Amino acid sequence: MIKKIVVTVILFWCVNAYGVPLDQNAYHWQGQSQFFEGWYFKVSDPESGRSFLFIYAVQNPDGMSPYSQSFIMAGNNSPGVSEMVLQQFDVNDFSSRNDLFDARIGTENRISGDLEQLHCSGNITNGTDNCSWEIDFSVTERWDRTMGWMQYLPNLQTYWHVGAMQAVASGRITWNGEVFTFDDLIGYQEKNWGREFPENWYWLQANHFDDPQVCCLSIGGGTMPLGTTVFDACGIGLKYAGRLYTFSFPQNLVLINYEIEPGQWQIEARKGRYKIVIEASCDLDELINLMNPTVDGGLKPYTWETVTGDVTISLYEKRGLQWAEIVTATSDLAGLEFGGEQWLGWNQ
Image: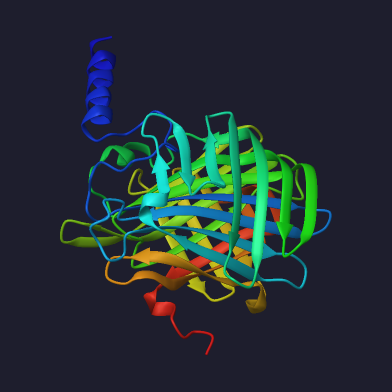
C-alpha cells in the first residue's frame, strides 16, 4: 500500500511539474520559445478506397520568432489522386486550452473532444485547390499513455500520443467541389508536440485488416536525442483479440530492427516471448509530400506519406525453441510515412 501511495504522489508531481494534462490531446505549450504542436486526423472508406488526412498545427506560439505561425493541411489519397492543400495562418489565429481538448485556427477551423468523442472541422485553400470538412469521431480503441513513463520526461525533442487507434467517423468532406458524405467509416487520431521533429523518422498506422480480430496498429519511430546521446526510439502498438501488444523502446527491453526506403517499410521487434514482423509498401506515386515545422527554416517538405498503403503484420509467441505464429493479417488502407532532411531529392 505504501509503495502504491509513493508512486501515485510521484506521478501527481510529474503531471503538475511538467504540465502533462490528463487528456493528452489538450494543449501542451508552457511558454517555450521553440515549440510545435500538431493534431492529426484520418478517415478511410474501404468500399471506395478513399482516404483523407487532416493536420492542424502551431509553431513557436509566443510570436517572437520569424517562423511563428499556425497552419492546416488536408490530404486526399483516393484512387488516382494524391493531393495536398496547405494554408498558413498568423500565429495569433491559433487558440487552445491546456485543461481540455479544444483548439481553433481562425474562425472556421476547430478541433475538440474528450477521450470518447472527437470533432474536427475546417475550410482551407491554397489559392487553387480547396477543401472543407466537418467530421465527428466516436472512439472505439485508445492507446492510453502511448509513450509510457517517457511522457513525464521534460524537454524531449518530440512527444507522441495516439488518441484513437480506431474510431467510427461520420460527416462530410468537400474536395474541390466534390462532396463526400459518409457514416460509420474508419477513423484515426493522434498528435505530436515538442521542440521539433526528429532528424529522421518513420510512421505506420492501420485499423482495417482482413482478420477482424486484428483491430489496429500504430507505429512511431525515429532518432531521439537525450543529452549528448542520440538513439533510435520506437513505439509499436497492436490490438489483437482484445489485447494490446506493445513493443516500445526505450520504455521496455525491446530489440527493434528496421529498414526504411521510399515505398518500403520493414520492421521487426521482440519483447519477452513475443515478436512482431511488419512489412509495408506503397506505389511511389501514392506518396503525398507534406510539410513539417523545423527549428531554423519554418515549414519544410521533409515528410512523405500515403494513407492507402499495404501492410502485413505477423505476431509470434516463443514456445520452447520455436516461434509459433499467433496471427498474420493484411490491410490495404494503411498510413505509411517516412521523413527527415536526408530524404530530400530521393524522387529527383
